[in-house]
Length: 88
Image 1 (cartoon, helix red, strand yellow):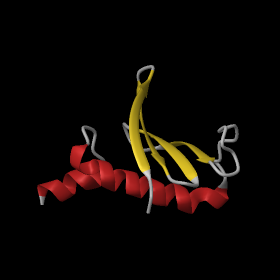
Image 2 (spheres, one colour; image 1 turned 135 degrees about the vertical axis):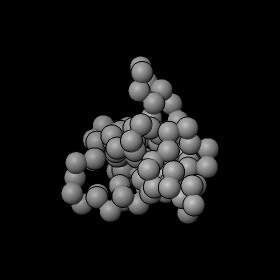
Image 3 (cartoon, one colour; image 1 turned 45 degrees about the vertical axis):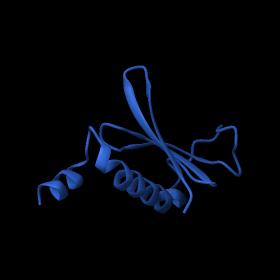
Image 4 (cartoon, one colour; image 1 turned 90 degrees about the vertical axis):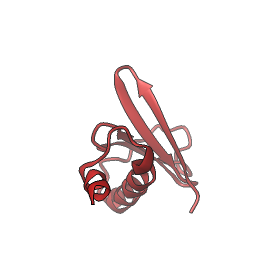
């Protein structure tokens, strides 16, 4: 699996991004809510946000889970399930 993860701040909002060869998903760092999804093969200029398309629910769920898992060890704003794992 190939992917790149990054964090950035736009205005007052912190975001996280995961990019695979095919997709780019952006989530809110506060609660990991998906904000945008782009198909980088069909839409390399990111003109058509696919976040609300039902056919992409599985990829959104998969990429969000990878992002949460990979950022949990260094996360300053951890999702509840990561906090519970660390207390065990």
